Image 1 (tube, rainbow, N blue to C red):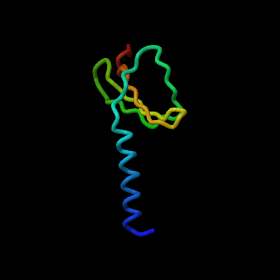
Image 2: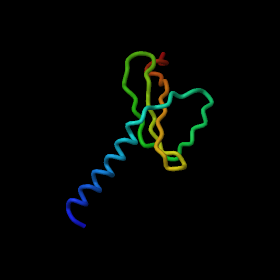
Image 3: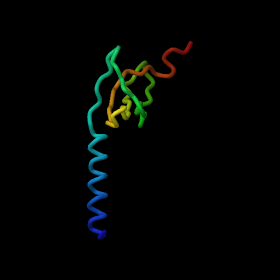
Image 4: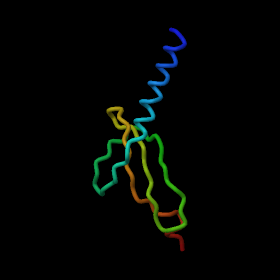
Length: 80
């Protein structure tokens, strides 16, 4: 394998991985059937308010990467 072929394969592989993660998240609705096989990441911004939006990125049982966004209460929101 030549160096240029190796670079082309690496670029194609990285490009498809990045485009997979660039998809927009589906807003979660109560009762949604989530097929979560492996959690990839949870992106939740730290806030001082009462709630924030978090995004769960996961791989389903078919191997497809999915994203779902949901409302997450702040850690200190329910503290007495």
